[in-house]
Image (tube, one colour):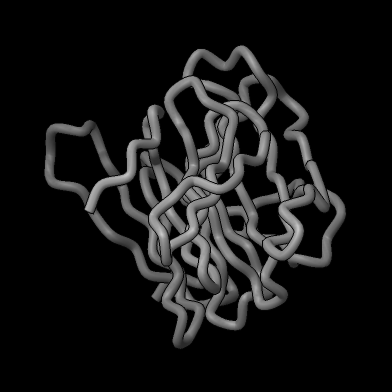
Length: 179
């Protein structure tokens, strides 16, 4: 099938009978789709260019907005109640140059991870502030993407190197120790 979003989409998260779609390129909305009728039923305004999302154990949708590729807006992490579509938290990043990416969550749905300024950041879903220090900060690596194994919370990061050469994947345990 096909659903005309009339916007670009970057990420999608299903929850119950809805799917949440991030409108990335210049956008600032999360569109809600009824998956039984394939109809857009709502939109939720978030920060500029939502690029990744994660769903926690409480049914809260976390949206990582990078602030725009030109860095003309502050990046933010937003928490949305999937039952009401209300914003629960807005956590703006402190620097206009901050450009977080690759929001992920552990298998228990309790710990969020994302890439920021060459490091892997982690925070509890209970936190009301963004983390200040990275869990992992590997020197000389061009961090590109992040993944979390839902079974054991191992952390995988990719090194894009120069975007021409073959990249590398690094595997860490849940405490940030290189395996």
